[in-house]
Image 1: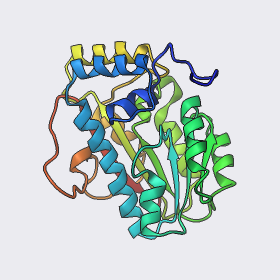
Image 2: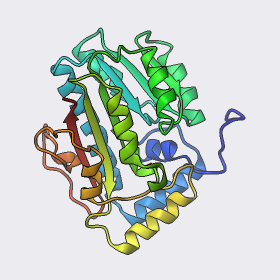
Image 3: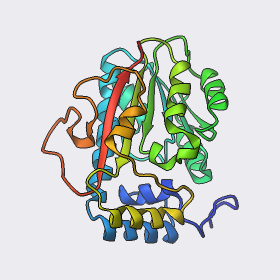
Image 4: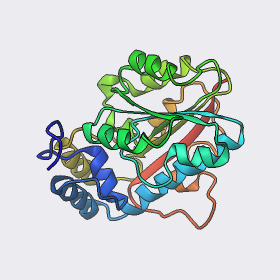
Length: 259
């Protein structure tokens, strides 16, 4: 039986993503929503895996640049090679804070993190920037550089909540030398029918989806200078092996440095 505070009658975006990645922390309602997405865009499995691989490459890059603190917003369910694991493989003194407000994510996160004193899970809505910054500041030294991750989460933030403004608010709390990492599902190349069908699937979940153009996604970085190769398809950002999968549904990825 699931814990009483977990809604198993409504799909959770985090649990749907877990199923897409091949995880087991999901329920029938999540699997049904994911299968609907597969019917709409079969490449979603490859795209989700490419997104996960990008996160790992980005963490390794920042760890190689000396970043020893990571703040992962909208972290989702723990899977394999999570942010803190990849970072600690490069430097064992790394500290990581995960942020999410999904009850099942929190339950699994806390159980998972019992094994690691340098990693913590903050129960908060990423839209509440002051609460997140305050909570993260109790675990991280925000006067030192931080790797800030918005991976696979900002397309779940509606226009009314001003995702670009959220990124800017978090950036203002970061020390120079910090980096901001974003991946975002794009409407570029996706026909109107595909966008509408995806919207209908997510309308029944715990979070609506808002696909945005590459220009809109680029705008979320504000005036921050992007690292090469800029804002590109997620599998094309400094790939380590193979060619990126190409499908109608695109995800853009980028990393910027805080001056």
